[in-house]
Image (cartoon, rainbow, N blue to C red; front, side):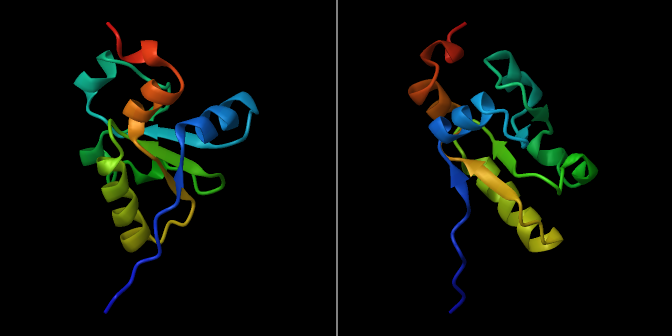
Length: 111
């Protein structure tokens, strides 16, 4: 049986602390263009379907936090990048932008 080491994740609170502390990291938003109109955390926008062709935009020298709406797409992308490209500096924003709205900024999802 193959067992996989669990994916590294950060909570919305941990991400906020990283932002407030000016930690050097990269935030990547994997949502589609139309989802950005709802809200954004101002990360680098690379839609999930374009990650492989834009892999050169993903930094290797700092932690990279990937997020989507709920965390599921980010988890799939991270798994693919770790498996196919041996990237080791990727983290998932647990719960995605929905968790950010719940834990940090409830106003972010309002139009």
